[in-house]
Image (cartoon, rainbow, N blue to C red; front, side, top):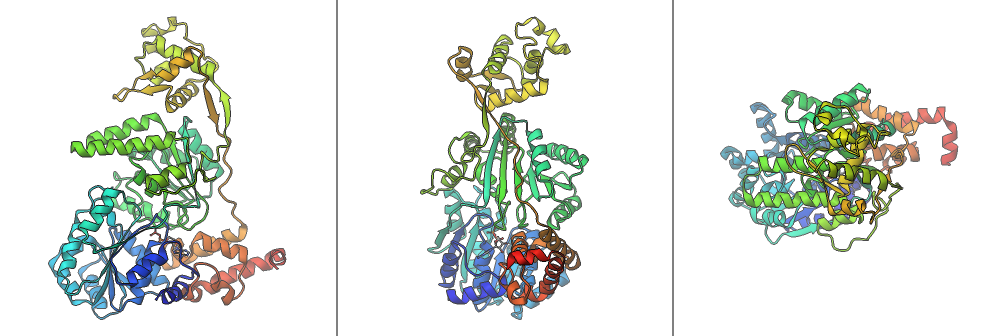
Amino acid sequence: MLEDAKVLLKKYYGYDSFREGQEKVISSILGGRDTFAIMPTGAGKSICYQIPALLMKGITIVISPLISLMKDQVDALDDIGVRATFINSSLDQYEVQERILMAVSGHVKLLYVAPERLETESFCALLKTLDISMIAIDECHCVSQWGHDFRPSYRAIAPLIDKLGERPVISAFTATATTEVKEDVVRLLGLRESDVHTTGFDRKNLFFSVIRGENKKDYLMKYLENNRDQVGIIYAGTRKEVDNIHDSLARKGYSIGKYHAGMSDMDRSKAQEDFLYDNVNIIVATNAFGMGIDKSNVRYVIHYTIPKNMEAYYQEAGRAGRDGEASECILLFGAQDIILQKFLIEQNVVSEERRINEYRRLQEVVDYCHTTKCLRKYILEYFGETVVPDSCDSCSVCKDERSLADITIDAQKIFSCIARMKQRFGTVLVSQVLRGSKDKKVLEFGFNQLSTYGIMKNYTVKEIQDLVNVLIADEYLFLTGSQFPVVKLTEKSLKVLKGEEKVFQRIHKAKKKISADSSLFLLLKSARKDISARESVPPYIIFTDAALREMSEKLPQSDEEFLKIKGVGESKLQKYGKEFLKTIETYLSEHPSNLEVQK
Ligand code: ADP
């Protein structure tokens, strides 16, 4: 059976071997067992149900939560020559009828539907007439109210399965599951003695960084300057922050779009489409953006504000590098973010039990931002992996390239000023006093009489504030959680004031570029963009960046050589082979030395 699966993997998808975990999941499904697969984003879940669907005799119903996701999947399947279709609310009645007919007459192997559809009597009646081999449930954590995307319609799945004459195999997939969610999925979907497969959660091509105590805006600007042509997502905490970041980057000439729930449906889908089709490189968004974004060539995901929990973080950050190429996940930490997240919990979470749970989960993110252990290890252990090496060599803790600067004297000046201001004011006023500002408020309170007034004249107010934030991040100071946060001293700062401890700041060196783009790679990208416009499918569905990079390295010059590129199956060779081979040929005729290097 697995041999047949491998043949299809090569024929349709153009890959030589299954990835870790895929084989086990596919064998389990083909063995007729209910299967629950927990695999990280980008691990290749779709293939795990698509290949069995092709090998099973009847039809596979795929339950998928998002319209955009369904369309993407069906487009991608169509592109590799697999017969699939979807039914959802984006279609009119006539189109729905047409697709139902295709399903009934056995013309499609996979039918994607939204969970809401299972709540309509007529649709359930239709399903009973089909020869269903498997029901595959994507994003199955949506069935659990402990998960972060609870979708009540997922609860209609189990009753539907019970009503079907012959019980098909059930497979369920998610990228994220805590113990509570896992138990809920098995129970609420009615999985029978399910095989639970948790593949390693590790995403080896992702570099994780936490940036603490730096001016976020400055960091972001510097990072983007160094990575101008790369594709990335910036997550911000509020709509207002999204607007601000978007506007300042657009002013600087970046190719950028934005996405948040305050925009009209039309504007949002245009923004999403522009990003998917490579019309813009960067999208800045709230966490409303992203579920079902399969764009594979995202090179970085920057969180400008901390997320609400580690699961949400790993899922959002995991949108980087689905194509397996080196990519970065950067979390910018500011102590004020905690206040924002706590405010959101207070506003949105009604039950006391859930509130306590949400606070605990938020604390886990704060701990991640402060941990001195390997970030990858922290994440993997969070997801329940037990045997994790102590260091990974590809996170900001393991690869700390910052240099240490002794800032004890400045820290003492700041602490002493806060003490003299009776620990009753925020970071701005403290910084103004240290700077020696003549601001009305400073003079009103008589702070110009303090001995610490103007003792940091050589800094700007912003620089002093940045330094205060470093000291907050490193827990020498803390901010109260009120509407107007007040900065206070901690035990740690008292020791520094007494001269018992020194304070060091880590200074970042400018980051190098993620990867250099070769000129052939850019030509291939442009060929892909032309096809994408012509066929109205996103570029990454045609070929991933990884496939284009392999082409630009291996320089295939015949159909056989082209078929050897990972991601080139028979259908893609037929559809696009000529065009890409031509681009390579032209390039080689203009750069003959590349050919010699190759040989
Ligand atoms: P997930 O749904 O788990 O996030 P996808 O199914 O979208 O991931 O797959 C992510 C990427 O990995 C896709 O570009 C897919 O073509 C690729 N992929 C999947 N399986 C393999 C494999 N066995 N070898 C190489 N690439 C693969």
